[in-house]
Image (cartoon, rainbow, N blue to C red; front, side, top):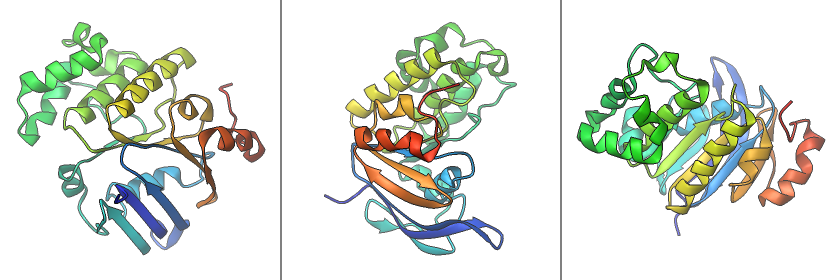
Amino acid sequence: MTALLELHNIRAGYGTIDVLHGVNLVLEPGQVYALLGPNGAGKTTTLAVCSGQIVPSAGQVLLDGREVNGTAPESLARAGMCLVPEGRGIFPNLTVTENLRMFTYTGTSLDSVLDKAFTQFPRLKERRKQVAGTMSGGEQQMLAMARALSTDPALLLLDELSMGLAPLIVESLYERVGELAKSGLSILIVEQFAQAVLGVATIASIMLHGRIVRTGPPAEVAEEVTEHYLGGARH
């Protein structure tokens, strides 16, 4: 079986400064891959490389067995990759429905986009006329995920899903991630806080200083999390 996403010896960064120093990562179809690490470890840069926002200075990015180094983000999105960025990336001055309407550019009808979003996140139906920026952080994250899922991606990239949210909200969002995984969606999740994501992950890695230092089953990686100062629980 061809891996859905592969990074081979990736070096990448900003300007002349490399943040990633030889990153290797393999995501098989149907997996939930948790990439854990403290702030500054290189996790978000890794997602930027995967989604085409940063072209690596060395190494290969493969999507479904095809090299995609230098491929534009919109082309990768059309190929089935969708990123939910850190900070959610919604339009705060638009209503929920208007935010979702933005994703009809793929040719999907608004009715279809709304039906899918409201089925997956019933709370959004209650808030459909509300300006997105006035919703709670958890509701905004639901909206960001609903927009991404409206494109029927093959691969979902999630950057710091838990950021700024209460533990109960994080738990409910990760329950949804688990349901999506059971439906066959492949997911790469970047997280600083390991506890919630390890409950739904099928494979996990720890990243430190731009390198992946450990990869294995979530239960085994969880035992090493505190040794690497990642904070297994929220404070």
